[in-house]
Image (tube, rainbow over all chains, first blue to last red; front, top):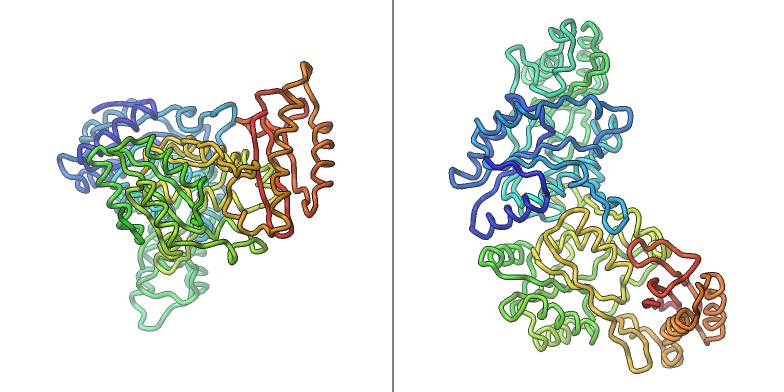
Length: 288
Length: 288
């Protein structure tokens, strides 16, 4: 496995792969890799085949954190990240420093941003105002550097994956989006680098998001008539309120393509929610 | 010369060229081609050599026009445009319809925009608020469709070229910007598709922009000490005010890299100005 720190080296390697007809899969991460990321790397290999090139990028992207968020404390584990990428058979690890991604040019600071203006208004976009502008910008930069035929994102960040798909289609990047299923702990908690923030007292309750998804799913599937969102939201809110240390940020029911919030809920729809445990904010989602 | 109307066909042609190691030069235009565009095509050929592929795109991009501007009346001359491209030796003409560039996807309207937030604040950005967002967005889309190694822009739109260079560097498009000199009528008027709007009475006065640039240049070059912008602006404003039918929009003196307006002017700096003749708005610029 090659490790590359420079954007220019990574890009010329990628362009040379493309000239030789290689498929390239990009797995963009912020490091602190866990079994969820490992499954993305495996999915990437499946997408491009044994002769394809799998590139994992590790970059904690400051433009997707607002000043009050956890940029400074975001977990870092570079050595074990490198080991995990090697073991999973990645061909290259792209590990740029901040000024490789956001350099000044001709004395002018970085100043070009990509924004998605519809799908990014609800849920995470509402709770984290500049978040998706940062995501769309860094994803565009990584797509241009790594020139992937396939980009692999986790379904755990469902709204992010939907926005990246829209960005790829709107701006016509020659890249196919691959969305890979959420990997869970035995009790249902979705794998996330932020799970390491949870205290020993909080951890046993952190699967409340998964329990809410399942409760909603059962409710929708056991009904022959459509359920209403306010009804289900009340029920799930009570479940969260009765969970020690848990505080609800949002619950939303939405159409999976348009992300438009729904009042009447059917089996083809989706639920997403965000819950805080102290300073730790967890998200999860599922099909109903 | 091939003519392509579909973004998907253009992109797969471009990707196939790139796999075969071809250089590709893109000349993005809004049609109504004149000698200025012809020189861009010649410059594109020089950039990629006889074996390279020169692609001219013709697309009147609605997102760079505000509702009060001349989108509906913008001149169109598709047949003579095609002839000009053929004669100048272009390999392909990309002629997409509106819904090829800005389609709905999964029932969601086009919603991803690229914005440059520093260089686009002054001059044209101030006079035409959404203009550069539209330019940056459509240029990003065209770069992804045509996959050019070189993109050729005219120096006449100096601020636009500077913003496109910044966009390419910030977002790391694997494309080199080539800026080609302004082509002028014998009296100095810069070639522009909008010159066709000028009435017979207005036309003889339309070289006032060129005369202003030359007056400023002479003033700067004849001085051993720095001139101040307000002094020169007053002089040029008087020249424009005494020109029949001409109305000043702006005059600016700026650093060519940062586009920051200057008070003290030196030979390495640049002037740009915009002047209206009735509804027709002309721009020009030059090195001092």
